[in-house]
Image (tube, rainbow, N blue to C red; front, side, top):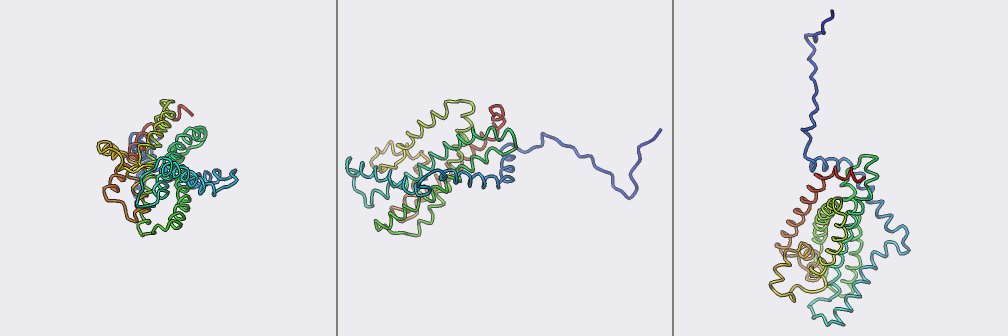
Length: 287
């Protein structure tokens, strides 16, 4: 009868490696680790989205420049001529265009995150891909689109002889916070949309109300004081101040706007990321 051989005196004994699934990190941390590991996929998916956006367009990237200008022109005529919008110390086109660009980015990116999440279910069921990669790629795509749309804004400032101050360098940081906020909201809406199919339609209606609850086409000062306090709870109001005040006032937005925008953005990302990652297994049942 053979006996198990003992290790040699100078040879260390082999340790038995134990795998414990309970020691896996929290889904929120695990998803972040996987997202960093598949970062090249985020970059490739963003490039693919940008190319597809302009591939079959006659005007191509030029449409990104013309679309906000056309909408700005229409709203300028309506509110400064027809409705006799009160005169400001700055041109009305410069007042309205930063808000239009911000809302257009938030509207399109959050809605597209919902679309991309659903569209990626088939791909993610065949190969392993962190689902958050599609959401992040969507935000990056529309962030690039927003950056391109800043070109006509600068052109209008030059035409209207609005001073170009150093405060404009803070606009990209405001855009980044807006992207963080949009990613968090998009992840939250996309996850809720898996459980409730009416969420997407409801969110579209809420976006319309969100537009009018943000002082994009009107100054906050004309709103009754009691309503102004309620509007201060609107995250887009503070994000708008970050990208508008350097344009129309040639100065950096007040610190309270920066702190509020940072708080709302981080809170939205934390909530959206936690809900999305802790419920990510639900996507497998709908793929």
